[in-house]
Length: 525
Image 1: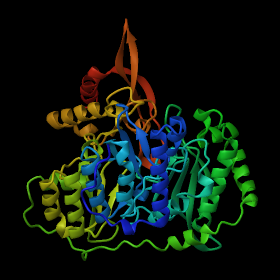
Image 2 (image 1 turned 90 degrees about the vertical axis):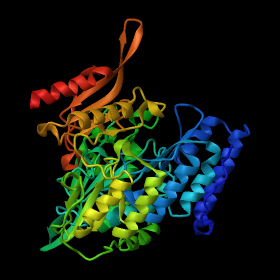
Image 3 (image 1 turned 45 degrees about the vertical axis):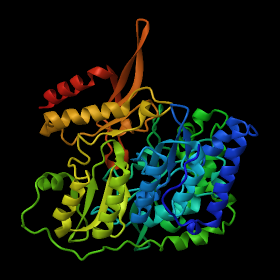
């Protein structure tokens, strides 16, 4: 039964295209409920609108696209309203910078979509055989190691691809990521169908901006690391190049075998040299795209400015806990006098009340510069240094002042058997248990920067392949019973855009993982 919307919203702010799209979705939902459309036909349709069935078979998971992870204060408040009215009061941040809601009544999904659309957010093409969320380094624009800011490119490409006719007929999902630099983990380009890494190269004696393009990456049960397609492709041409890549992938993918219809299998089968030849050949077949001019104009439409002037952190007394938080959660920007702040979200969850309070905090300190991260955290950028103690106190007051961001205690986990139909084990339960173990016993200095990532099944939504210590849900027959086990993955790392995947190192019964961690801790101490 549909829930009546309580909080007001501006329906006039919804674009005509989005109004029509939601009306069509609502009509198709009514048809399937009336028995006028087969459920299997509606399945792909609802997936393309971000609606997934859950494990309980009575509610839905809703995925919301957050291009480049960028959120305004108003959007954050709307996400909170939706979580409170239609979900379980929780906003979940995913490992691809999206937002997910769980336990949503399918009858509420049209109204939920309208609420989000009123602030410029959509669930369209967040799931299904389409181009998924275009992710980007959340530090791009403020990072010390980037040649240029990739934010405008990821933002414009997201808009260009949404609903584009060439993205509606893929054999499988297609994932794109932008990274501002080669050194860090923020973009994870090597695990995407296309990874674009910012680069500058001298051409005819002049420095030119472009991208090192990586193709054919992916995780899942059969992980592949992307191959370098080109060391520099000029940025104004990069997206026509992307279009050629997608067309080649679509033409060669084994679409009758859904499990093989990903670019990683095409590149592996053909080899990077032949794949590169086909992509260049495809250039001659592309027709003019009138949306291209709008895309190029959008590249210059993004501008992020600080709210306050730059300052320095003074020697005044600091609140209790500030030093530990500052050591792990705060880093200086390349702009002197400013810092970016990493807000730790255990299990990637933030409540509706916390989100509303954070929106107010962002207005006070940073002017709408909230970003989601692939580590399931949030980032505030452009914090004036002298504001850090006051900001910490306000974050701490709403339960968002925990230290340890991107350390051993900051464990990544997918939903697992809490809600996912494909889950084999409780990845969130294990992550919470390990986090509490580390907080209670302390973390050996030798392993305090190790990253642990957990997936509930081999599909790697928790990105266990790029963890120093990874686990994914498995099982083992013990006599007449099936026991819950986890496959252990060791040796991966996310730095350098996820350039090294871990290797399988045996299975561990779920109840024995804390003992394994204790043993591992002792061995390296």
